[in-house]
Image 1 (cartoon, rainbow, N blue to C red):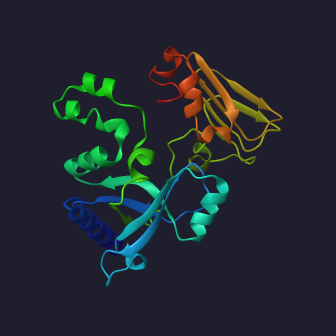
Image 2: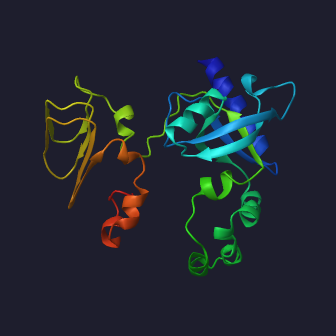
Length: 241
């Protein structure tokens, strides 16, 4: 226990040091499977020759790929890529300046952001994710390994990995009845849900909204959210919350 606590303290100290540098530090975790919904980074040369990545040292990132297809994800893993854990340690000024250089979708609004004019900033920028708009383009990424059993539970589909499963592999919450149904994820808040003779489905029942898709399609709901009416898309507690 003490040794584990000490390792955590050391890891935190390293991150604190890197946060003072003019680099963009992120945590990378060893992939547990081929997962096209995650970001992948390929480590390059170690920052310190006497402490390589395999011994907990930091390394420059050769390339970053967000949400690659299955075949590319598999190839990246074979090449030693890590998952992006979504934990970033960097100074606000460093990332702001790098956005100005690398992300034209946002660069036009940064002056307004600096002035605190959020309305003008929103009107001047285009929609782009941090991963595609910055991480895939910058050459200032540094990765620190973190082997901590991490997983991304930020999507509905990922709940099957995070929840206790029944004997048929269903991850359920709420008033749910499954008969001859396997490997489904069901989240019921508003009403009773009954599944019969189906597998690999995601079913979400909220107050005033029922959503059904396959687990495969549930990993990326952006095309759906973009197509939905605003009143469905933006209400708290809805699919994109």
